[in-house]
Image (cartoon, rainbow, N blue to C red):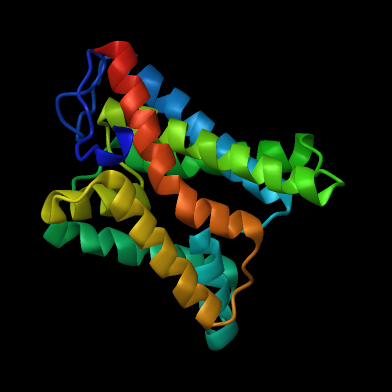
Length: 215
């Protein structure tokens, strides 16, 4: 059952180590493919108008309380999460850098070229599809093993420390973050809740499919 998956699987195109400056072509290809899908999903969630992601809600909440910009708070949160990598023994790689670049690019592409649905029902549907795409993309780029983004690295590190299923660890993280953000005044929508409760199972499903197809 994919909800019980605890480890990031290794396949033929996985890198031997995250900090690899000369990765295999296949590792780099799947890293970029996964991050492109990841960014597409993040962008579609924004375009859906069904609600921001939990970490954006947290940034918004802290921004309201501190008076600092959402963008600056988002940066501070990312740096803070990276600091937590140290006790969790997580190592950055080229994927950590490309995560920020490719995801940001895909979000801009989505906002520019994808229209927002007029119907509230279609907004929710697009939000759910976006979460599925984020989960699949996240799984593909994590299996490439060339370095995770800040939040995914935190998820992997906590999973190793707790030995809990990845779906449980990710869902707990996202639900905790959205609750704190909402308490601080951040805006929560249906899409936010779909992301918070659904991203863990979606990442686990993506890992299951990648392992099933390539092993």
